Length: 602
Image 1 (cartoon, rainbow, N blue to C red):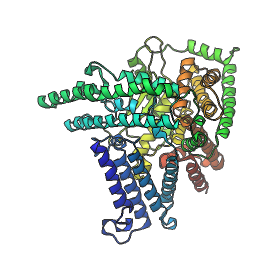
Image 2: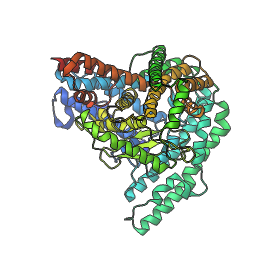
Image 3: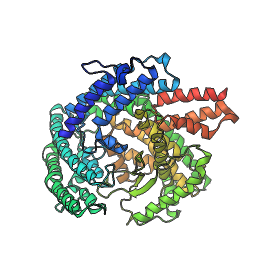
Image 4: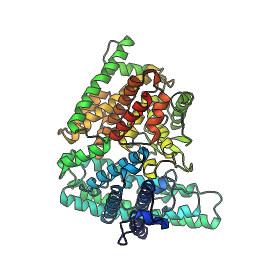
């Protein structure tokens, strides 16, 4: 608890000294004894001061990006105190940003300032909604992600004795987070801001898994089981006792309190509805989430129609492939036939991982034809831990910029022992190279970017790029096996269907059952897969919209560049410019690329 308070106090100190928002009224131009400064220098000081403030407020984010000054702290980001500190930081940063003289900075700085101010305004608008009163869900919640942080396979390092001691302090913070979450959810019950029943039902098994009778079976014991050899016998014995005690007396009791609250008090008061529109101010809340996730001004109804149009287009291409293969049955029958005739899948997790590694070896030689810059960060492929594979899809976790942690492509291998699984080429392209690992690593390796931009994460850009990357498969030597190309089309169809289902659930009154059936009928998904996806959209509204919206914008920008530049078009130059400034909001990306196309055309 002390560490969390320190973070909040420290961010206010940073805000006062770097952003000029304290009672002393220090201005940027007086920092470092300088009486004056160029607008560019003032802007850089603003960016750096703000980012330092964010790191102090969000120490786990600092850990993730390789800044280990706050490794002994855990933010209670759902507390009223923390939310107030965020608001103050954003308000004062925006005030200083509005004072920058645009005419006196260059075009690149104007781009970053535009992104900066846009983000701050949007973040401040978001404080109107009370997401902190629904802090627990089956994904994107500290309740289910903290075990990964402490497992030894996550962002928190376990290389030194100090690393181990730091995480013990984070465990103390996690107890506070659990108790704060329970208080918040009780307040949410009073205000009728509660999770849907299905979200809690999905979460309960994950919480139960953390309640163990033998500390050695806990994920939190893994760092002890893999303790570095160079630790002294005294340190090994002391840390083993400390972690055993922490699991028995802190972690397990905290999860027991949460489980008891969810089962005995919250579940019966959770809502049977699934739409955000069922919440107080839910319609405006969903509109806000749509704007933040797509980084556009598209309205939900427009997105719904966009999804329907894309479904028709992709289905037409799938029918073309079916006819080309001379198959006369339905698309679902064609898909089943392709799967039956495809090479046999893997029946072990190790073999499945090696199958994905083999795809990477096919892709690598073709990359220089499309990109002049390649990332330095290492990529590792692992299977998702069994405790969370029931609810967690395959995913990518970014590398540490300092090289201490590789980028990790987590593959969901649930049931592979009984149901052979083939390595999916479109999934590799999306999550690994040239998708998430490629784009995010390149961005984080650009030390010439302002740090807030170097570590920016916009769903529409990041996921849009990854979905666009799937379309490069043929050019990179993949999709030679018919079922893999058809799988790529179905992957894109799935993202298009998300536009329809997400808006259907949260704006058009669709039931969960209706959404599951639509997804099954449209995308050839199994019932269990469709149910898992729909429950994801229920838990994290609008997040699934960014994929297709972003991909369509990137693809349209490429088509525009090809048409405008003709023989001058260079795919390497196009990709390099697209990725040069890191992830951007789509409206700002469009303006940037329009200007680039004009420059290249002259």
